[in-house]
Length: 151
Image (cartoon, rainbow, N blue to C red; front, side, top):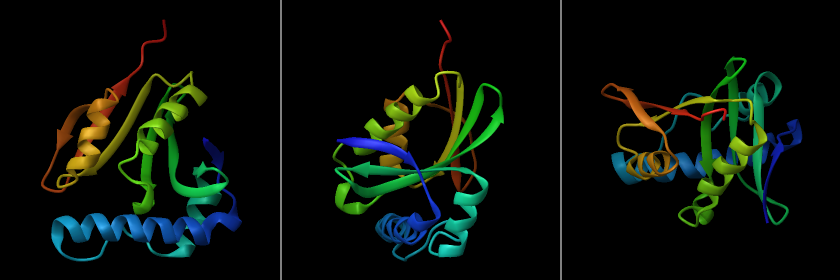
């Protein structure tokens, strides 16, 4: 069973390892090298995220398989950041399910924002499938938005 739980400081090491594996696989697949956003492989960066943001871990049958964090932008607007699933669990629908769970946990949020690297075709496919639409792009990344009607 897949669940979302708020991340705790004791999760920082495992979440950092998951981020490192996920980002290195993606960057290596597209660019032929390891890498990720600044601090992706630094436990102190993850500790700061847990302390200062709304950080979540994605749990499958009592095992952490991924994570992300949220940044409130307004009372009904949220930014979704640093979404990762461990490579062992990718392409099995867990990311899709986790994002749907997140939306159900925040019914008052009607506008979601996120971005993904320009080369990340899998992420682009997932976000479009979930109803996100492109609002801008540059040489490095694509910015997406999703509006959920409050009916």
